[in-house]
Image 1 (cartoon, helix red, strand yellow):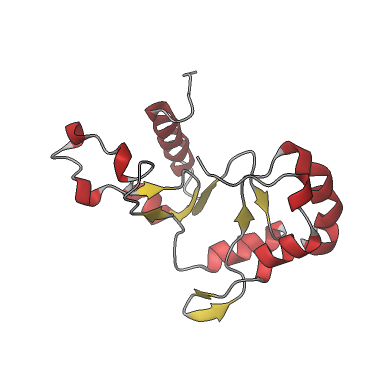
Image 2: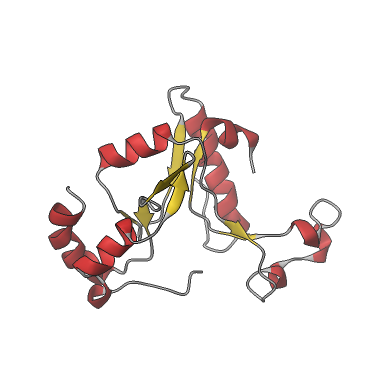
Length: 164
């Protein structure tokens, strides 16, 4: 077993080992990496159908000129990684098998008082996006950064709102 520290390259190495081991089983076609503070917004059958029917993978990356984006770039990474290629991204992802084979701190936390029926419904269906070329209100399958003190409310609302 190898020690992993948050924010260090050991996390990247651990994720790569996890993905490499999952790829050994050819029946694994989609891969989702979540943290302990993430919750599903829909029941498992909805999430499974959505992901297996999707034509895309969901890996969040963006260009930030601030200290948490480009400010983390180390010039010693050149020429392998140029500043123009540097992106900030979420550590959590969902991807299909072909992308997994190819390779390649959040300011908000939701505590007990944040978790309301309205808040969860807004996360589930309060946005409009495109899914497989069609307009959809299911834009997020998981929500993240829930604090432990939110668990009682999540458990109370989940049967009604998330149907599990």
